[in-house]
Length: 107
Image (cartoon, rainbow, N blue to C red):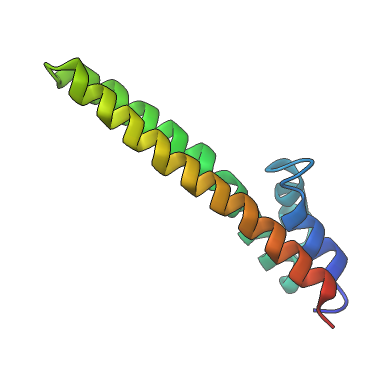
């Protein structure tokens, strides 16, 4: 862990400067280094999670909007899905920063 701690930390902390692209590049280039490969893969999926959830929620809203008769119910569904997405995005952001700092201070 000490050997790869900077690249592992940058994989997680890249949520600040290059969220999905940096961990993907590290993940693709570190096939021979299992520790860095695993950390970059986890960081990649952690950074990609809010975007994937956002796409799924837009699809759910679109499909439900076609079948719901009442705009109030569709509005409440949108508010709930946006709240869930916001919580997941904030938790993902904070967890990435925490993991990046943990890799930096680990011995």
